[in-house]
Length: 510
Image (cartoon, rainbow, N blue to C red; front, side):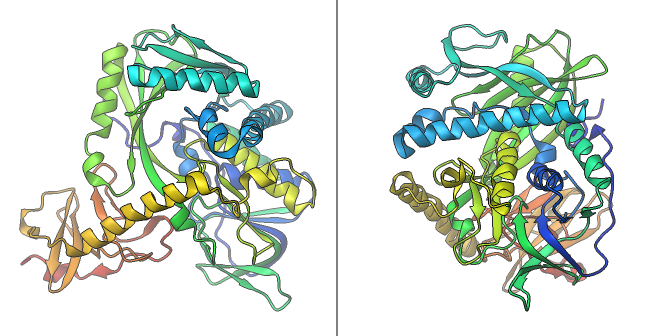
């Protein structure tokens, strides 16, 4: 059986919408059609607010559609670290925010009667590394201090090697596209909501009245009182310097049919390499999801065998019938591991951003929608300060900023100094390489029809040299995580402009 190289969740149809075709005035413009943007539109619609929702591609085609779809406040080992860096109160706020998001999703599912394979499960973070046993115990102490329902256990329902685990009670999981497709259907029937796909936002300017105006790639503008940037990486940064305060990682998932019945629970390892396990059901059939193999975007040497390693792990611990899907996801992590949710920067009071979910987007995306909706409606929200993009904590922010930007500098300088010696004539089908064409570095890909596609390997964001990602057939930037297609189209920000294309007729001699 051929493994599909797409997310398992894409087995569900989602309504489609036309591109924007004229200038519009509205109350709120939302940029991004994932869980954050869709949920924000849903909450604002309930308040009779006029909304325009813009999606650059198709709704739910980004990170939301590539998630493990765990709805949980257990985000690995996080609470002991938050207590150490931010204090007990902020750590408690983080848990309360995630728990509120979980309950809000449950309420929406009940209210709208959404069939989205929702199930309540206990969540486990486990270790089989002696060096992590004490870390898991300290996380258990943090649970007790913060009043988080959970306990240390030495046995889990899933029979995989482990020394100790920490259970968080009554978490959940669902099918994210079935859930969001129902919200989209609800929005499509609301005359206050207008949705446009294939409508990338490229800039925000001030109108003559001083209100923020979103400019689309088509040249149309949307003038509104408020703008919500829910585009994963903020497409509009101004003075926020988000590219310097977050780093991008890719992680991998595979879906499989197994011969045995799943015992229940959701699982993630405390140590690297991360291993995540959960199950989803369709027509009374179970599909096991195995995730992990995280690496910094653009670090090509670390991703070549990611899917094979996950398959090996699955085969070691489960009797696999067949693997059916494999895919990858990208997410962003802030310096203190808490998302940025709120006003983009002090100089743009009516522009809001939500980003940096650290792979826990189901709860963080939902709480982001609540925080931004409350801000737009001038309501108090207890989590505004926790998530404020203007926050700064000397520990760990300074250490992380130094480390992150040292890595960026290494790749920026190293990429410029490296001299490629590869030849186009040596290139096989569905392979890529970097060559030197005159004084320029050119990324060349030969497709299955033996046709060449060539791009300048200089990232259009800040000039780093992009690297080839063979797993996903993309050009990835190791500095800030931008990703491009074989013809240079932007797939992931912070870059907003495509890579320059080269005439391939002159490359065969290189």
